Image (cartoon, rainbow, N blue to C red; front, side, top):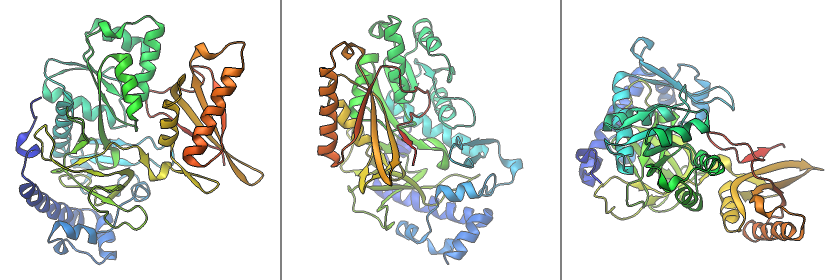
Length: 431
């Protein structure tokens, strides 16, 4: 596949680091001079832009967390007056005040550029017809990829969230070749299509660009098998501007970070200190080109690691492994650390289960309990209870072997767990 912007995607490491330092110094100075919030934070830490003489000096700057972005709602982190803001987006705000993100005209151009890179490295070309299934609105997901795909020259179908039957109709009638959305919605689309008798192997769709939530290798394989496409993963987050931070090339060994726009660090979640290259830690991002809302050392809470060695695609940008876990997704049940991704891996190893599950946490008589609700293949429901009991025991035993924790396993019929076009809900914490 051709490289969208080889000037930056194929820079030597020395040239990239020189560019990053120049942009980092400019970004820190811009934030200090134009954002009263960052000026106060840096002054409190007794750090000034003059102290950033090397990339290593970035560690001297304090972290920015989502709490700070919410506390500054709505416009406290803007570094430009509102008259110079041409776009406002925000997070869903389901856990409190939403995070508001502002864009200048230059920011939108840069956002379009990095999303074009991500779409191009996934395999989108000018002749493609691209179905956008992300919600259009304040959420950044659909908009960034929309403009990135358009810049490549492909045809955008801005269907957005809505009727799955309509998406299936357009796959056939519009000759859609690329699907953009969450992996959980791709599975749901496959379910609905199969029930309606759709033969995805006969449709022109060939490629999926997935983001918005973590996915496992097994789920990707299921998407590819059921939709007859190649599934790719991309990464971004509203707090630093939306999608476009990193994307997957045709080689598929890690996600290339657009590091001329986003400087990545991986730190120990507890100490905040850098971990050795190749070890897992929390991803921290600093924007290098944002005007309206520069962000310094944002703690993403996403756990990943840098991928070692050059990539055969020819890009020289640093790569990160796919995000499977988040520090704030971790459940502590009777002293045991539990990530939803661990449970998902176990389920995919048991024949007859589906990708749809829910972890229900409750506190009974002062003790935490964990119930695992799993949808299973409809063909397994019959008058005979023995196979279902055997499956429950098998899953419970595997969970205990992996996590060291006894859980209640409940098998439910297909369609019992809520579907969504956005991020799937895997945990119901009732404590």
